[in-house]
Length: 406
Image (cartoon, rainbow, N blue to C red; front, side, top):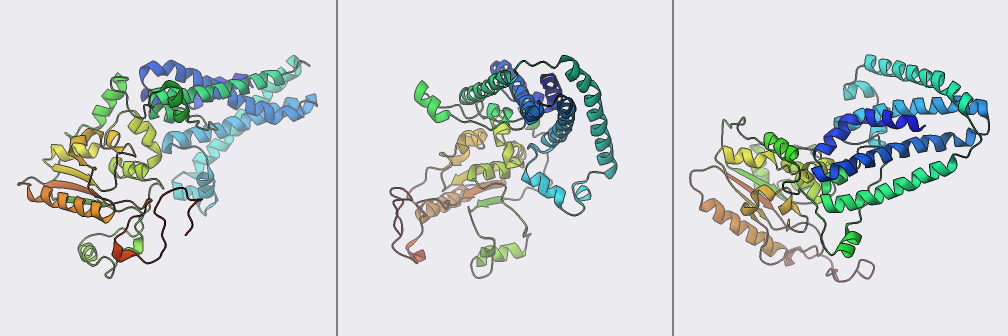
């Protein structure tokens, strides 16, 4: 079983190297050791699956190589999936497989699947041909379960150690720790903060990774991007807005604007959390890549491109982006152009935001302008103007949900 540790590391090798490139250099040796422990954990799981059959030597000698062979085939598929889209085999993966004409829908030729099945079968036969004689010859009555228990204990230590590394090294480590499958993330930032008396480093550590910085600068090079037109851009973000609100009765002015433009009727939120969604909007990436991308120090390419094309930009958020760490992550590169400490609450903050936006537009010269407006989010205390009050009494946000009596 343990001989398959190098096989697992080889299958996920490209993804491991890519993840390590975003990790601060001083943490890479510890990360490399953690991958070995994680691969040993996967091998231990294969041992535990076949352990009930160990009472019958003949059956066990066949079951072990078959299970490891099929397990390696599954790991191959999972490693390719992770390298392509950044997540492991999950419910979505199997849901896609169950749909009609699944292979055609995802663009995988049938010939590739046939080749994979043949390769998996050949690998399993090799496992049986090599593993069965090995087990028959070297099988002993010595107990292996204590070794398995020790390895499982090592994995617990590795997971706790990874949580400490994430606290000290940032979110790029948190993302890198999930390259291998079945590695549940453990976050102990609150507990470690109590012990050390200092906050966690959530994002990029300046100067920690020269390679990461070089890659980040190359990927945000605005020189190749030149606009043929430079219209003013107004980017409005309204959290939890129902799609059917865009109609002549609810939003008549925006509706009239939409008739002269494009309405994307099948747009879906990229995440259920605000900061993940904002990351996706500005980076143009799937939201699950936030930790690896932002933790590695990369800033949105959009901001550099706008500046290179002569744009004057301002980002005004009535829904504070400070508490979501967005000013230190997504907007880190344009912090001086962000306004998020606005006056009042609820609709008062929205009104202040709009007043600031008008002043920004009015003081602009011939330069094209990019204006981002983020209206107050639908979080407690769920502020609303008096004209929108329909039900009472309403919770004022004090205390807990359990203590609230509506």
